[in-house]
Image (cartoon, rainbow, N blue to C red; front, side, top):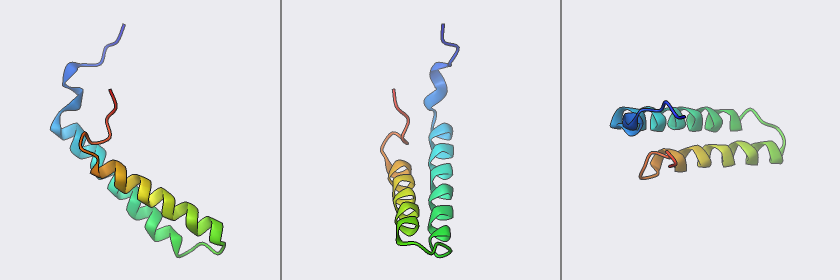
Amino acid sequence: MSTIRSSSNTSENVSAFRSSHQSAAMQAALLVRFQYSRESKAQFRRECLEHLKASLSPGGGICA
């Protein structure tokens, strides 16, 4: 039986979710410059974009 409350998708939760993804995106973007290999730089760029996309999704990235 699930104990998750129905209010788990409040605007505060969505805001916190977006904020955490935006912080992770910034961290990945900052780490790109410290990478030497082309593959490593590409990996951090992909990670950055994935976090930005999740932070901009209409539902805040929360899946049902």
